[in-house]
Length: 320
Image (cartoon, rainbow, N blue to C red; front, side, top):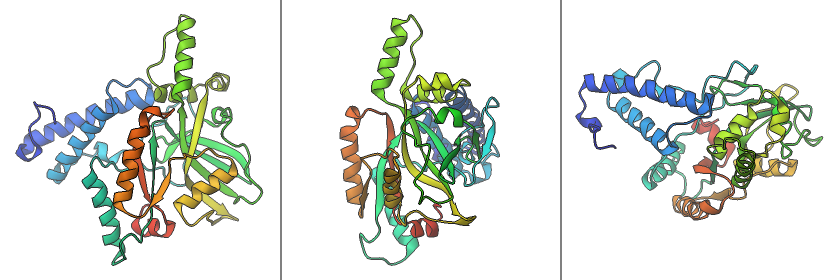
């Protein structure tokens, strides 16, 4: 909390209402800069602090939650320069945790919801949260059909031609793949490739780019796919959207870890730091290990993603 901010518990209703209006407008402005123009004015940490402030005020004054509240939004409105694609299954945002206590509360809440289960009987996956552009790639009859950005979570931008230029993404799946498979993951630019690109831009007397994430996003949104092809974009696969056979829902695995292993078998890049654990202590230890490795990773991350491993438990918990 900044020095000039009144603690939430000391706000009057009028002050809370006024601040929520400011935060809604300010976060919408930063969303437009970040997603629409790839030109952020503040760091991810400062943006997250604004969102936490908004959420805290809404929790203290639930009657003041606005229709345009940032807590109700996912992603951004797709740009009109790209044809829209409606996701068969929504692409939802992730809840944030910021402390060891938050993580322990998450693990405890899973156990409480699922009932009296033995300690360490529920497995969780943990993997770096890549700072890139979320993507859903749809395959039909084994062929890459469409690719769409997350957009507002329901409708994304059709960037199929540009996705086809990323060599790491297969154009075909094996013959035993379901009729319809949506592979979801993150498009990013490696830090080494970003530095090489900026060195070339500087040598050519051109303006250099700000950071790998926005460079990747801008590269993927080029109207000319030939421009995208000249940028070294990469991809990590980590989740599924729609999966079906003969119009009926299907599965390629029973666990989150199994899904990622299947992606690897199909030729998709997956993050080698994804691990599976059965206790909060193990999850915290892996978080710290990722933190130590972070400076040497060839990609930017903005946290660690935790998921319940078993898909049937995810469904019971409402995560799918």
